[in-house]
Image (cartoon, rainbow, N blue to C red; front, side, top):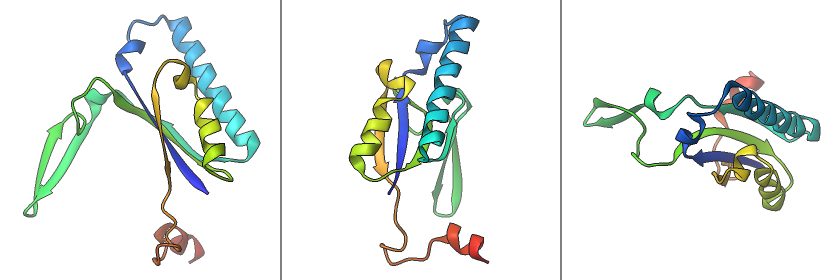
Length: 131
């Protein structure tokens, strides 16, 4: 079963870190990703640039409405994500608890990825790959 681990926290806690602290943080993330790969559960994942780089789109009556910044102006932001493929929710929770951000108080939303076949729809990603 695939799960998305959505990493949510206060990105300002990283602003005042030294170069050595930033390097150590990146090393921790690299080690976590390597552990996911070695366990055979890694599907994809990315860190995101700061919320100040976000653009939010809403379409109303066919018109695009763009807003600078994230969809919600809160202290906590989405900082990145992983998609993992593991046996069940308990395994996904175990992996989520191992993220470097978990120790720093960040939230990790764990959400099952939609199973298109079970929902009665073709999976557009798999259709193209099969062609």
